[in-house]
Length: 439
Image (tube, rainbow, N blue to C red; front, side, top):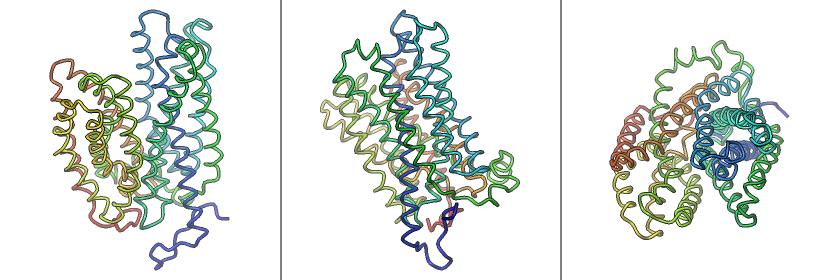
């Protein structure tokens, strides 16, 4: 069996042998399963922070404890650009498989460290220090995960259906978030608060470490999608090559990632707080509405990915920017006035359907803009910078403007970024790409 995935013969219009087709579909499954584990491990921290905060920080004000854990979470977030650069370089110079394997090993190690970490009462200041170290490792890992997974899945997907198959990156990204929430809900059902704070919070991290080992075994079966010649080329995986010949592509990807990340985090992670603080729902109702909407959003991804195979990635992105710009203010304003959880869920799902024009093709539309020797670095670094700056700050900016009495200003901020995303999407090529896709 060859070490790289074979391409269809010239003139076959993307026709694969049954064996090659099965290998590619299995590769999509193996790569995306690791993606699910990575995001499960990353989000478990946020969902469990309420329970483990007292274990790692001095028993003072509970708010201070949560702020400390939130600070560690934020630092992990800021490690993403470094991870995007590091793993992009590894993927372009050593191979996609190598990068994917190292990434999931690091996430597994980070989860295992947190699961076994002694408390502040046992080892003092070493406890929060080691917690921070574990989160920095996980931040590096997840920073590299996006670019390499997006690159690999776009390269291994069947020609003519690349949008459909690449959409499973966001299916598993959202699935990891939902699975983390489900595990915590189950623990809350069967354990008391005292048990959760004493030892129960460690269980999700153990689950994350175990599932990461399974993902590692699956990823070790992957076949490489690049050639030794590509990996050995002079500029492979270098910043010099990226900015010398592909600067325009880099800033194009950065531009629509900024808007895409901002609106994604607005209608996913921030929405639960918005429903509580601005719509005045109970936390339990807000959680239910957000979870159901997130599940429907996950199910939409393959549909919108398949749509891009029909109408083209550029049209998907133009629809995303245009509809996002036109609907953000009306949807958020209508949400603020609703009293029915059902109506709130319908509005959020509508917004997420618009976001799906972007997220379903997020990976492949970026991968198509770079040649293979610089693809993982270009995709990973541009995404990580845009995501860290605009996605990572979405919740803070929204809450800051609300506290200042200018909440509608946040709606317009998102709208302006959607206009920018639309203008940037106009720069996308109408035909052809470095992946030789018709769209």
